[in-house]
Length: 480
Image (tube, rainbow, N blue to C red; front, side):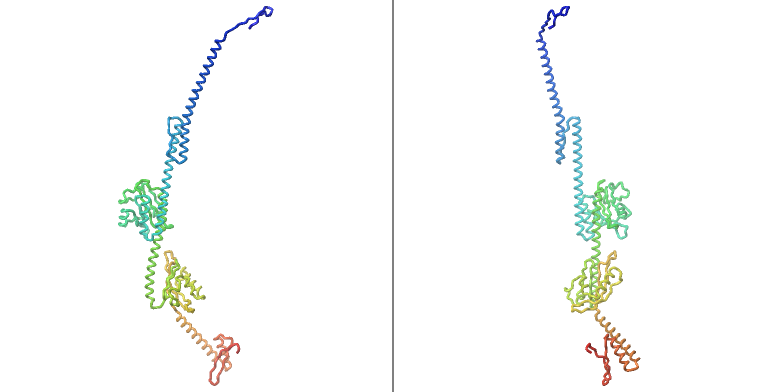
């Protein structure tokens, strides 16, 4: 409504306009409803699209998470399915590549662990075998066969350095080829080939490709050799020989093989040394046995007793005659050095033991000594001991043998001679002194004094019997 005014400003009326807006309102409502419908549909479509996109994005991630969990549990056979070329697909490809590398790494580690376990088992088996073999030839033959069969090497053999120090002689080889080389007496100079270089330098020689090494010496009997390792067999700084292994594959031998073979070579060196020492000891024992038998035959008529002392075990062989010399049966004296020591006269024990020690340690050129020895009847007999020691390459004694002679009768005879000589000297002195006396009293005084000195008495008495024309010196007691 609008008021109507005159020129004076007074309201003279009202202008009222009435408009029908029903159609307009209906049209407006229709438009609003349409807009709301369109917006709802748009929201619905957006929700559906977002759900599709979310599902498409999260499903590969969920699959990736599930596969990762399975791999973490140790199932390396799982793979993520790759769909499309988007970032998720690229991530899935990378994950699958990582899984494949992990499978390869674990497989390699398992192979290395299996190889190392096999190597340790073989090394332990070789060590066990070596500890029971004392024949050097049998030892090397079993070692080469054990190594070849355990690691499937093409060929294995062992060379030993000869006394000239310049030649290596093959003493063990695998298969028919090894037998043929042994039959031929195959040798190698230390100035030639990989084997010679290992012996000459005291260093392991590893050649992954033999054709690329100018110092490699081909063997017509082993035409397929393509890689080789030569390991010195050493005790301390001394080379005993060479352990040589060949393979028919380029790069078929590596550093791990070299380390394993070095460990086995060290065991072989100790076993060879032990076998040689045993063989040498056996030969020495046999020579000593024959020598002892010959000596027993040669001294059988002299009534000497024999003894044979093993310094390493302290076991002493006392012959039956040795024991009977001091009145004992064979089972009554133990076979050790302590039994001998216990029967020594207390005043002679230190002197005898000192003589034994000085001789064994080289401070005395020979062992020849006299001493008193206890007899079963309680008396002491004089014995003369003579002996000689056997020494090893380092000059250390390992055996000593000799004889005991009963010299009691000689000692008794010497004592009697000494007593007679002393008596004669005393009589001569008394006679000289008496001849210098000028009276009977002086003669008696000289006689009494000389008798007292000779008998070591505190007092002496001379009695003259005029009827018998004799003079006697009776013993004087404390009561006298």
